[in-house]
Image 1 (spheres, rainbow, N blue to C red):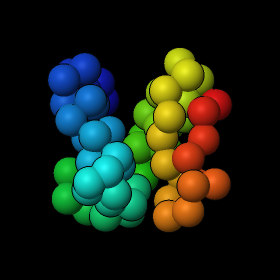
Image 2: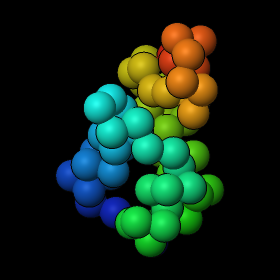
Image 3: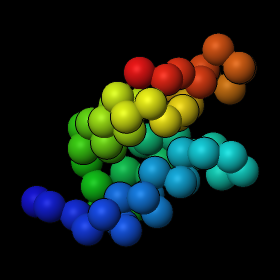
Image 4: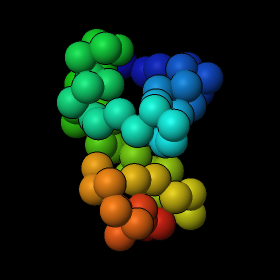
Length: 64
């Protein structure tokens, strides 16, 4: 299943502050599989964008 870019961006924003939601939380809310969300996050990191890994410490922010 393909998702519109706008929806993907909106969902990815939920991972960022101030929301800081986990992938399992977002998966339940949005009805998108956790695997898809992990792939989206991985792709965004590969582009060089910072995304949290679920760790709430500064070390939890990774770029690729």
